[in-house]
Image (cartoon, chains in turn yellow, red):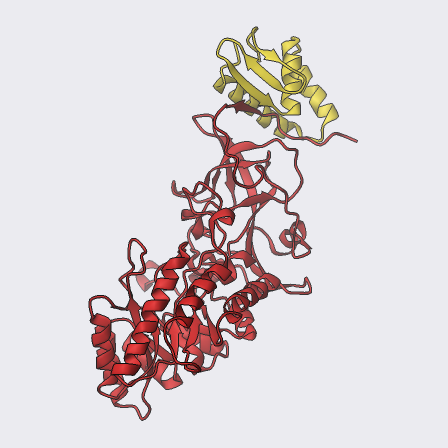
Length: 79
Length: 447
């Protein structure tokens, strides 16, 4: 997962793409994931941390992770 | 203690004209029905599950009686069997005082088995067979004549009977509704209805007791009912004047809407559907001003169905899976589809989660489990981030779904009634494969 460099994110989950003018609202977990990805954290580490902190099974997280990537691709936010 | 998980998701923000009308956006959780937890209902009876509220059935009936009965001296409701002919539902309405309005021989027998006296059964419908007419005559049900062939068939049936069958004439008329419903009954404006009345009265083999009309379904214009009532009243007065026949009742049919929102409607039905009081005011106002002599007002009969039962029914279902469509839209597959929720073809049903979620929602396409492209329950609905195993609750499904549901791809599920003391009763058991196959026969060479 490599976010485009110009994408702006906020702690509250507001995401802005200055190249297109598109803006998005991320729920708290998505905002957290995007902030860490922006900081260059490895997806494996992000997922391990989520499994540690949240009440979710690894299989469910993998499905939802793939779905988040699909959304980011659909919204043209990935490099 | 770990944090509660909700899948990560993004929503694109779009600027557009705001609709300042309508209810609060977003889905509020409904965790219990009539005091019984949804999770408990699913644990006991499985999913999907139809749930009927006896309290709401009685409340809706009493509200209708109150709306009309406080404005007109003689009102009789006839429960429309085709709307939901589960015996527990029918018997609840009969306990409240409803007659039965049936449209087939099968429904006639159901009403009799439910203890309705024959004279309290109104037999409508365009497809009565000779055996149906003979049975109706035998139990002294009132036959609502739909067309000339039926009239002549009944005259034939009546010829061999000691007692004159009691009949009402079904009349279709221009009440200002477009398109005008003219498939049921005899037309008023072109003289067909008057001609039929003459044919009923002259031979003396039938007893004319009522006039009936049904101007349509989900009619939102109360003025149309006033027009229909005035025209029917004028016809009754003419019967008395020119045929020397006193009409005992005027049946204004049904067609009163529930507060389900029709597909394509801009505003929710709760904001646009007139109350029953408004319909009652229109109908009774027209009858009271029609010119009947004091003390000779005909009984007002109403064949309410949807308005009495829709609000009392709920359907609980379960999320089977989530997926993303090619254009990025979220899709959720539920364990019920159009096989159980026939009315989703014409309503945008209100659907709630059954547990609390965060405020985050996602526009979702709701599909049923059928391997058919038409099996779509909502084209787009804002729902919280549901995961497989979560339950949803569809509101106001009591009308037509439990009589039009299909045994297609999946078997039909349990139906329960929650009584007024919050006791849950199974009123129709889930079907089994054995039940499905019991009428089939396999030829010897295929065994």
